[in-house]
Amino acid sequence: MNNSFFSKFTPKEPKFFPILKEMADVLLVASDLIIECVQDYDHEKAIEYYKKIKEQEKMGDALSARVFNELNSTFITPFDREDIHHLADKLDDVTDYINSSAKRIVLYNPKQLPASAIEVAKLIKEGAISIGKAVDQLDVLKKNSKKIKEYCQELKVTENKADDVYENFLIDLFENQKDAIEVIKLKEIMSELERATDAAEIVGKIIKTIIVKYA
Image 1: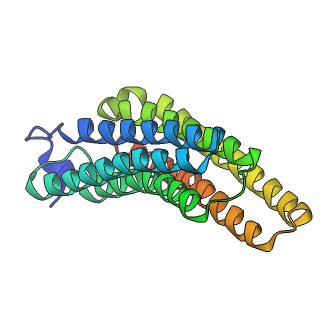
Image 2: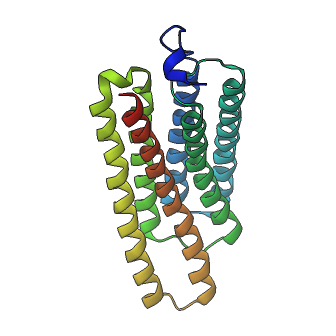
């Protein structure tokens, strides 16, 4: 069934845009919480932050499920069903990685977190802000495609910055950390934080694909 053909005669359902915006809002809240979690690290506080982040992660899962259910009950969609599903899925992935990072912090209980954890957490929030701006403009894609592309490019730049921070962290970790167990703990935590920025960049790629098809 060709959406582009039927869309000439049938109005498209706009209900997906508010759900995607809610998912972007959930991601932003989670990104603020992970910054607070790593900025003033304390194990007991980390447990509380993890609980709050977990709540956001559950909200993201529920919203992703709503998108899937709406796709199954909607005749005409604003974009290809696969693109909408993929976008919702990857938006949820970013929040999932934030949650997984907080979970690792709680489970591994490192002696301390490196300053680079704060840097990456702040880059996660930068990505969340860019995603929020891009998603907010999807319902007027044709008018604002240039601006949306800029937000997607910001996600690429943010991911590159996170890569650099992570690589420098690894160099410092293997040169200066003598406790092998702490090496494993910190590497796992930082790797998961960095994956959140990777997932955010993938969101940008999906949005750029949508732009190519519809702008």
